[in-house]
Image 1 (cartoon, rainbow, N blue to C red):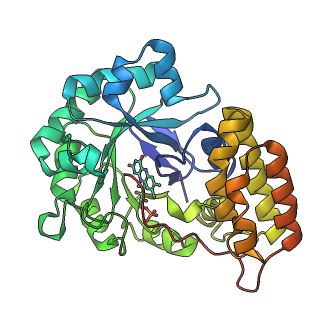
Image 2: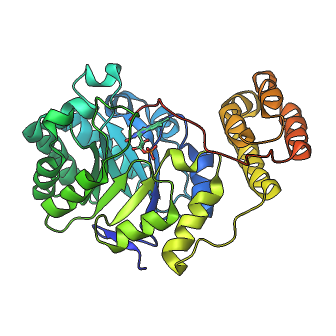
Length: 341
Ligand SMILES: Cc1cc2nc3c(=O)[nH]c(=O)nc-3n(C[C@H](O)[C@H](O)[C@H](O)COP(=O)(O)O)c2cc1C
C-alpha cells in the first residue's frame, strides 16, 4: 500500500502516532520513527505560551530535534493571530506540519473556548485555521472529535469548512467530547467525514488496536490513514506490526516477552538520557507499569515502581521483570480511561 500525501508532504505510510500529552515527547517520537510510522507529533502545546515565551524557552516547549523529519507540532488555542504566530514559531523550530487540537475535552481548555469548545463554532474555527494556513507554507491540519455530544455531531460540516480554507487533512477521533475516553469510537461517523470532504485525507482515531482492521478500513476507503494512541502504550511492536501489515499485508512475527521488554527498556533509558536521571526516571514510571502488564507476579513488581529514582533502580527492576517472565495470561493493554485531547 502506498504512503500518504498531506499537502506537499509525502509520508511513507498512512500510520501515524497521535499527539498525546505526557507521552509523545522527543524520546517517544524517536522510538515511533524507529518503528516506521509515517509521521510523529508533539504533545499539544498552548499557542499563547509559545508566542509569549522567550526564544530558548519556546524551543524547549516544543523540543523538536533536527533528526525529526517529518514531524508535526500540535497547537491549542482560539485566537487567529496568536495561532498564526505560534504556527510560524513551530515552523521556525523545525515542524513540517502544524496541527490544531479541536478535540481536547478537559475543563481547563474548553472553559477558555479552545479544543472541543472551539469546534462547536464552525465559522470561528475556520477563521483560526485560515489565519494559520496563510501564515505558514507547511500543511496545516486539524484534529477533532465527532462533535460535542450525540445531539451535536458536526465533524463532517466542520471538516468541509476547514477544507475550504486550505486545511490539508483532518484527523477525527470517533468519540464526542462528552464521551471523553469512554465507550467505543464510532468509525461510521469517521467514514461520514470522508464522504463529506472533497479531496483532503481523513485520518481515523479511536481504539486503533487491530492491525488487520486498520488495513481493511484503509483499503475500503473509509479513511486514508490512522493515528495510533493508547493502542501503542506498553507495546512498541504494535506500531511496527501495523506498518508491516500495511506494507506487506501481514504483521510479521510477534515478539516474545523478552524482546518486547528489551525494547521498552531502551525507551526508558532514552528518557533518562534526554530528560536527565531524576526527571527521566520519574517520567519512565508509567511506561514501566504498562510494560509489566501480564508479567508473572505483576502486582509485586508494580509496587516497586513508586520507588524508582535512579538509573540503577530502573536497571534492577528491569532485570527482575525479565527474570519473572510472562504470566499465564500474557501481556495485555493497559485499561486507560483518562487523558487529555
Ligand atoms: C494520555 C492522553 C493524552 C492525549 N493527549 C492529546 C493531545 O495532546 N492532543 C490530541 O489531539 N489528542 C490527545 N489525546 C487523544 C488521542 O490523540 C486519541 O485521539 C484518543 O486517545 C483516541 O484514541 P484511542 O482510543 O486509540 O486511545 C490524548 C489521549 C490520551 C489517552
